[in-house]
Length: 281
Length: 219
Image (cartoon, each protein chain N blue to C red):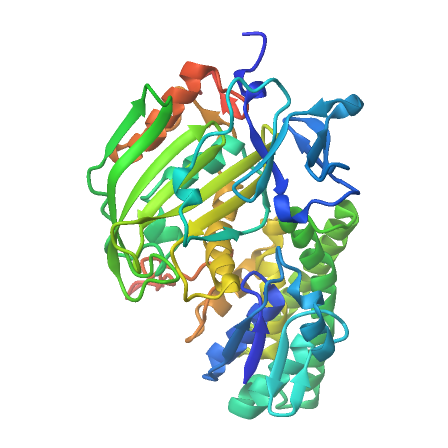
């Protein structure tokens, strides 16, 4: 393989609401880029040597690519439903592989130990069986019928409930979580993890949410999600090996890791290897 | 008592921790520090021209320095935390309260740079943080020789609460705590205090990992 398939994918590079004419210096897969607002008011992303990069604004963020995206940014139909509150959680930098950040987001088993008394609590540590598939038509990884006991699943949840989840990976560094919505049974809250790969072992993470919750102040929603993510951050920075292994070696997956196994298989199939370890150790 | 608070701020956590340890209930007013920069907005700048949080309000008293807030909470609810049994102890407490500002300016700024992309010269900040940690390690070793587990006494004081958060979160700013065994023991002792609360990045002690107890009959 001479060209990494991830070059042609879309990545988040900033919050749309914070664009300004000066531009903000950042990076994408090792290349310095600048993200600002052009004279026409649209997002303007410039790569090294001043070349103009593809840019679009969606889901509260600016998206760009170093290559030539073959399809538009993935759809989140729920994001356009009326009545949802859209939450820009803000960037958090993590010294880890962008793929590790996504993989951690897909994991349920760590909830009682890392997000104690919020997303999980001992002794309710069991991960019940759930379904995982790579959907061929959409070319996405999906996990469904995920259930977990949570003391405080969302800011709008009072007391413990068994929460149902669905996970979706539509792009190598993006994942969308659909979660039981306490105030609106029958609908799903949407919580996303958009990851900007700065380098193979460094990323900026832009969580974003589209929730049915008319009660909770916006700042509380932001702080809830920042709390969860920063609880993960120190774990992510200490994982070994740093790059995500795509072949079994030092890491032995268990049944609870089915989503991670499917994610790794899907990455390998597409040659999405930026941030991955290819030779088993 | 109203605390203008940010959940990821170690300085705000000092006040929440002190309140929890002294049994004071705070009325928490969350501030959108990141990404909203609300602490630099007109409402909070009118309250604190320095543009920093935490801010603690109690009646007509407005405090903007976290060390002063620790003193206030302790004096009001649990004076033993002031640590002023002797002149030497009171002075040690003041020494570490002042020292804690160096932790904020070095380890705290390194953490903001590495985590929330705030500006700063990271190599300089990490270097200053390392120097401060070495000083703290030496101070704790001297305390151990005196038979005392905490910074100013054999029991915790506001000095420990003032220094603990930025030290415990040093790895967030890329500064390892591995070289400092006295700091790790001290951190464990603080987390074992009744009423201790955590913040993101600082974990509670796990009940399955109690302090080792020598078995009966062991020499």
